[in-house]
Amino acid sequence: AQSVTQLGSHVSVSEGALVLLRCNYSSSVPPYLFWYVQYPNQGLQLLLKYTSAATLVKGINGFEAEFKKSETSFHLTKPSAHMSDAAEYFCAVTLGGGGFKTIFGAGTRLFVKA
Amino acid sequence: DVKVTQSSRYLVKRTGEKVFLECVQDMDHENMFWYRQDPGLGLRLIYFSYDVKMKEKGDIPEGYSVSREKKERFSLILESASTNQTSMYLCASSFRWGSGTVSGANVLTFGAGSRLTVL
Image 1 (cartoon, rainbow over the protein chains, first blue to last red):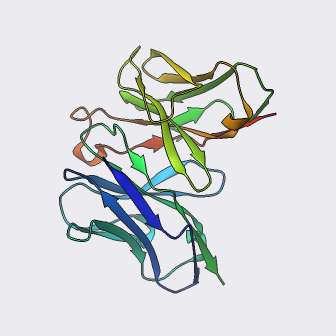
Image 2: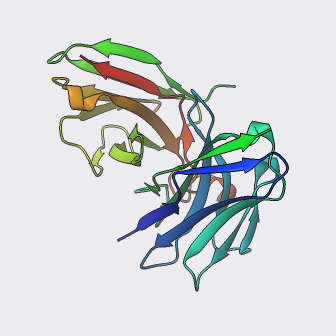
């Protein structure tokens, strides 16, 4: 069965510091992996996705994630945090096509300090 | 530029009331989904639909039903609301595998959410 674990429900960084949000998954077959972001009072929007092409995936707003099969990880990073990055971030995994049974992690709320 | 519209952002209902949450998408997506979002639990799938009049149970369907009479509209129904259904409800849609672009495969587009409080 698929599952997603996000390490840390809250992460706090200073503006300009590295952002690292951790995600580990379990899947019996090669997965599709996603990071979504949710700003206050909004729905989720896609940040980036991995679909078995390049293992280093670049997304919007300077975020990127690296798929590491040996570690079953898909951690999200950004070299320099900005105040506008404060939001909740969700890692997700899907098997098969069409978005069926997309499983989400519990989410990590990112705080950015001035 | 809104693509997935949820009819109500905030609702307050009483225990036992029937509640309808409406979702409309304008992207011609085949698949539509209802998720429930609770702090610390992430998003949990309630029901999904891959075609008109088709529906499948997700991970937490108890106490909910759905209706999809038109491709663009997917409704979530709480037959008799209870306090443990107080939550944020998110609607999403996506292309069926093979019908959209490769870059859009498996990508969910979400509405802004409907926050339901049951008293």
